[in-house]
Image (cartoon, rainbow, N blue to C red; front, side, top):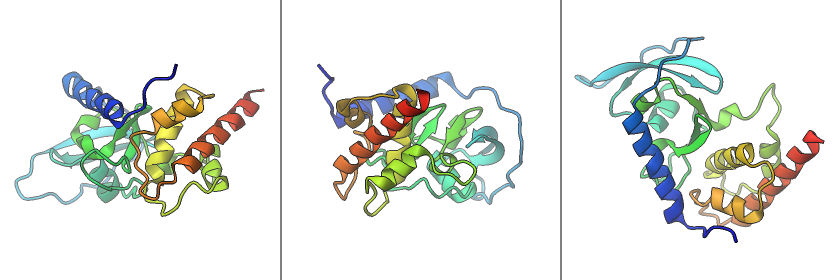
Length: 204
């Protein structure tokens, strides 16, 4: 029997990840391929310079202690594919992968990301080619207004990386934390299942 699907279960998992990050503290910094210029800071703001890898590229940036990961990605690294919907860890529009684990970027402080690997929706395509999951979203008419699509993609990407052949219930469970205000959940689910079948064919 498949586990009960609920937003409570999803959010409890996200909360556990936040607590674990807080307890463990930042990990060691990575090598740096490029240096991001120092962004403007509020007068008297406490800042720390962190190293992180974003979409495979090592970056350094001086962050204010109050900045969220979502704010840092959008406003200071100019990766605006990560959307901010509720800014309260409820809608999932800002979902990114932190060390391959989907997390709400609005609920993570940038200072916690020192030494971490971040993947945003911009990191899915390569050499001008869409990721098969992105193409499946297009083929199955998954995006409607498109605002939640980035977060949906990242949750689905994490699922397929961990489970290349999920059941429909497993897809629904993995994407429970992503709210679609257009209620296009069926198309998102169909797209993920189609992408999983493409993955199976590539392994044959």
